[in-house]
Amino acid sequence: MMTRHFGMFKFKETVSSEEIEFCFVTMKAMIGKIPGLLGMEYGAYDSGEGLNDGFTHGFIMTFDSPESRDAYLPHPVHEEVKNVVVPNLERVVVFDFNV
Picture 1 (spheres, rainbow, N blue to C red):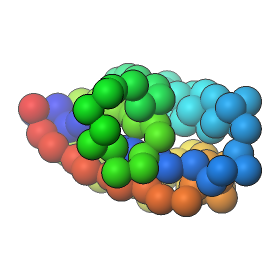
Picture 2: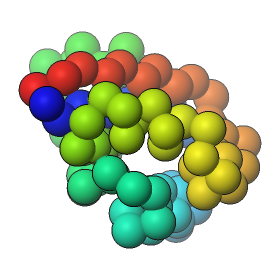
Picture 3: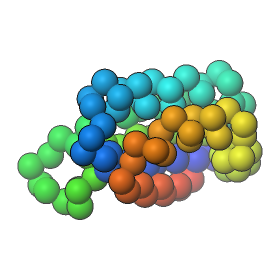
């Protein structure tokens, strides 16, 4: 059973598009450094539906198992990435589910 780790970010208004891209590139660089992290996709909100509640970007990470996701959360590489990303955020939501 794989686990999807889905998140939504609202970046602070002072954060540039280059800084936003750097955050996501830094996150994606965890692939190959954290066991069980198989892939990551990300992008800016792009819908006329308007149900994003102010969130501007989203990402989905795929883990090979719930156990790998659990090991990722306190992993030192993840902690380093959080130090890059979190100071740029106004809001964040993360939601995990198994597939």
